[in-house]
Length: 37
Image (cartoon, rainbow, N blue to C red):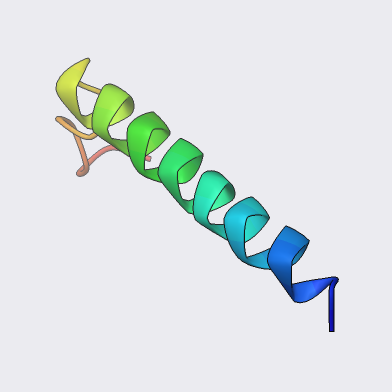
């Protein structure tokens, strides 16, 4: 049961890192040209 106190903050941290990475890539124009392959 003690492992859940490690896994919950770890999963929240990974979600925050993914959200920051997505926000950075969207802000820097990575998703501007979606038509060309």
